Length: 137
Image 1 (cartoon, rainbow, N blue to C red):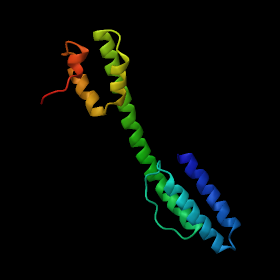
Image 2: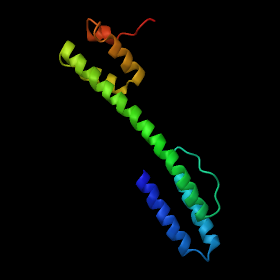
Image 3: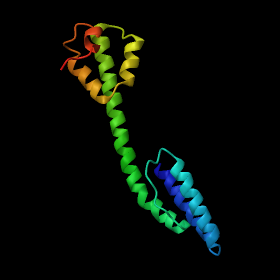
Image 4: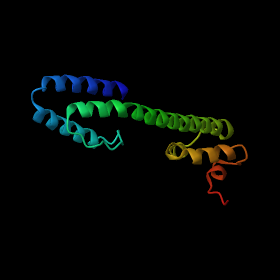
């Protein structure tokens, strides 16, 4: 993501220089690029209204750090969930033998909170059915 934004910044600077004597085209390119970026769900940040390629370049440079922090936090959360899911699978295999595909699918689709709850109960459960039964708390 960061590399992509650096490339955008470099291209925007070149385009801005190339269209130095065409403010109408600079504005049209800026609006088109902003609209294109707004359609990308992965960015998840509303971009302010801009009127020029230079404004767009500055705005993207400002947003780069914000996007980097968001992706880093998201990556950490995903990594933690994957790690806990693998730990749960390993404990289940050690405790109950081969883990059925439907149980693996259930773990893959579960939230981090649900996986944590199963990890808390895995040593006390008498069976897989016992572990995955709804709790009454």
